[in-house]
Length: 259
Ligand code: ADP
Ligand code: MG
Image (cartoon, rainbow, N blue to C red; front, side, top):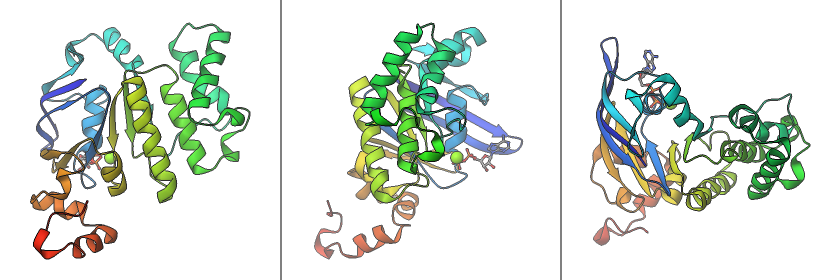
């Protein structure tokens, strides 16, 4: 669980995060949504210490991150798996080497233990056969799965995913979303997903916060988001033409009922 209490951050005059409080529970997919520039990445950066907030508290399972020494923060960072936008694989390493990289960096496992773990996570993302391939030989969806395998190889308690579906077709996006969701349940990770993707919101939006101009302006789940009358949220949800169409088709008498 990650608890954020009254987090604020300004860059110069510009307040980018305003008194943000939210709890991200373990074993759940927590989605952070909002327009470009609303403060989503800044929130994630504050949580992992890349940006120092001006005010507020960040608790990783009751451990006060912002009060810690740099050395103590490293312990927490080791418990965080990252799935970066665009996968960010090393081109000069094959799949196995990419997935083993965090184990080489973060653990003192023996080579045998590391290779076993690599085998296990590659199997989990259904890429057992792809270990010797290089990133240039993989499709976009396969690269994401390698990225997920690499993120989970050190067995993280917390998993941060920044736009995991960027650049993927809708079907592959659903496969990746479901994989992240299943892994979250299996490993009981506290999973944070920054996304623009309304499909993800509907598919795996167990807990959603909507950020508008640096403020948490709505919180709920994939059912309640379709019933909200918050105008900012509605503008976001119905920005995609598919959702607009779905809305038009709703029966007038039962305005909120299209699940
Ligand atoms: P999002 O991820 O929701 O698109 P960001 O958190 O990246 O939004 O950015 C929120 C706002 O903060 C934007 O207006 C952006 O220009 C500004 N911002 C982000 N990082 C910095 C920085 N290091 N210095 C100055 N302004 C920044
Ligand atoms: Mg961003």
